[in-house]
Length: 473
Image (cartoon, rainbow, N blue to C red; front, side):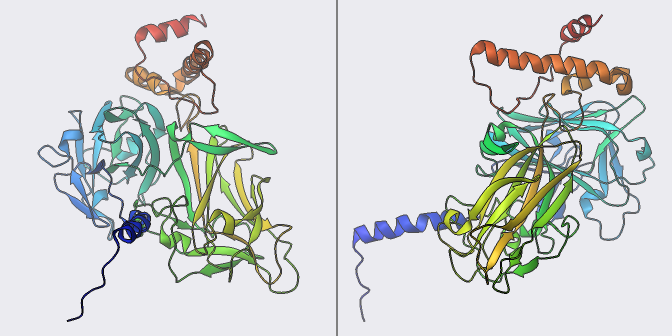
């Protein structure tokens, strides 16, 4: 029998060293913190091969519900095809908390599922409530939005403690809060980095502390491709088609790719963006001796007075060779990357994904735009622009809020009065004083001020409220 050839030990070690990065990129993501709750239910529900545990007493998820006197609701006639997590809900007539033990500090994904339905126990027409995640106001005067379809709100929250606290606060004594399902999942380290590029007029400057901000996912778009469902995403995200946001189809073409997406160390990982997003794109294509004089533009309605993270995903699945694709990138009409060379940033590999993060300020127009166009280096008879995906996330404001000008501490202290409409002006003043105190503390301690904001405290005492009121008597 022929013997196998012997492998030199040094060659074996080199082979292992080369294989480790590929193995690391291929391992499926397994979060240390992975809470999935089927709220208001005593039984578990399976959605996209994931088990959501019931939070009723005695159920697997009951230990994280830290409040009593909540109400379990059941939909007596759920719509056909509606996932089981939307057949029940937990309602709150008073401030109530879920407390999640945190094993891994850092960014956590928090998804809240809402679906209003008829119930004999609670009239969900009286739903109006606020939601706080670790002190950040993520929803204010929320009503569930739609009774016809489920609504999912997604947030990325930095957790630097042993527990993450989720608080539901009815907007008044006659109002209710509710939730159908909750996800709290520790995020990969590379999902949100510390630094991005702030678009400051005509120049780019560093925006530090991005990963320490609270972010709300406003849009997650697969450009040129079909909807990507949570089942086909390693972080269980949904990517919607771009048709509703593309300003005009003129000058652009869809491209679909059947090959392998080549994730590279230092580029985008599979957790940053899934294969099913990167294997489709829209492109600008030159079909003759001239480079097209056209841009692809997408427009997204946004709320003014907030900063937004704009994440653009690129993967050259259309060029026939390297070093043929050069284009310009614009955000809100500002040139943020001139003569962008995708081959260079992708380590000279085709079909290797890459992403770029930009921070922009929402303005009074209520529109955020992204454009791709040919550059002076673009070639005829080649691809002259490409975009595979867009994500837009809202950053918390100086009040520590993603929804309005009221900070979490004031919401908690004002609940017994139950009239947020009257106290909002005073709340804004109090929260403003607190935010000013943060800046003054930076200056007096000699800490260099970054462009990011830290969250404000939620444990406001009665004394601090009285002191703020006295300032304006």
